[in-house]
Amino acid sequence: MRHFTNIVLGGGVSSGYFAREWVKHKGPHNSLAIISGDKYVSYERPALSKGYLAPKNPARLPKFHTCVGDGGELQAPSWYKDHGIEFLTETTIKEADLAKKTLTSDKGDIFTYDKLVIATGARPTKLEDFKMSGSSLQGVAYIRDVEDADRLLESVARARAGSQRAVIIGGGYIGMEVGAGLAEHELKVTLVFPESRLMERLLTPELASFYETYYADKGVSLRKGLTVKEVLSRDGAVTGVRLSDGSQMEADLVVVGIGARANTELFQDQLEMMDKPLGGIRVGPQLQTSATDVYAMGDVAAFDNGEAGWMRQEHVTNARLMGQFAAAQLLGKARDEAYSYLPFFYSREFTLSWQFYGQSKGEAVHWDQEKGKKFGAYWVDGGRVVGAFLEGGQPEENAAIAKAVKSKAKVESTTSLEKQGLGFAQNLA
Image 1: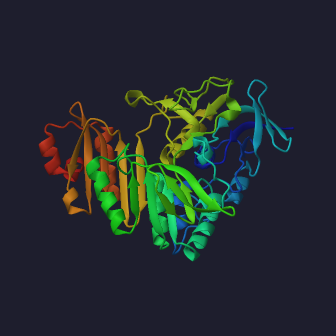
Image 2 (image 1 turned 45 degrees about the horizontal axis):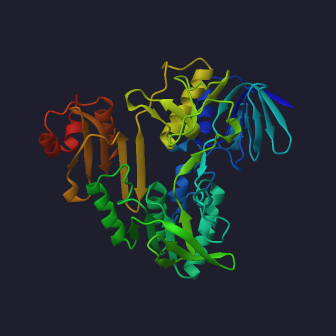
């Protein structure tokens, strides 16, 4: 049995930023342990669907350990040791007793704590979650950790030597980013998704149309309004898919990108959970759970974000900020009484790069889209800017649209807003 004053359970992005904040505020040496089932210490997961898949000069560890994602110091294993933090990798916790404050690993090791921070993250939604088989087939891939990405690249090599065809299930972030990556490996890529357009929950029809045309020009096909009903195989390897319209598609590689599910099973019946579809562990303003001395952060934590309502954000920026807030909170150094978050999403595909802040509700006002290089949209609700999207922005321009959303900039006329475009945000006092 080993005792630690503080344990962070999970080794994802939020844990790396928690550790940095812990060191920044001079958290006591040898009082913090991070327990993770991962093979590696914390790294910036967005790299896996972006730079890691690049055919030229791909990103590889240790170059993208946290906290390089926001320009911070690279925290390799030696960094944790030097700062008195014990990072236990490849340690899977199979049982948690929050009343007794004990964690038991799959090897029978028992850890006790005074305070626990849950950062167990989320896992990819599997084919089996939709009552389909195929996850174990050669050529069926998910992407959540480095091992997943390595297996995907192995499948890419096999596909290039075979039919050169890949099917991606899903038209969201993973679908778009992995689709771009596979196209750059010269595969014939098809995205299959049930929605009427790419990233339907975020992109307006006008915005989606641009990206759909761009992808088509890059040789990526889209099968909209369809689902995969069966993954076809022969001799343990994928050979294609059968779609909901009865058609079949040949493929040596099938990537599944249909969302994620919060890893909360260890704490069922011990913590207050949020109902589906939000899911996750319910936390209070200081990220505290319903159990004494237990906090939660990152993908697994559902929080009240004021006017935006309850949310659970599976995004790297939220993971970073929550990690920092949680560490400061435990050390009594938090500057704010309650955690709040300006929703933020970004993506990079091919030579494109976009950012979105806020909420996509109300009236969408598009600007400069016909120019095709730098364009965007504002979402206006109640005469105020509540959301903003920018393709091709520079850092200062992205900061300007973020400010417009955060300040809920007043809009006198949507016609004027359309004409001003990016200038509206840039000219705010």
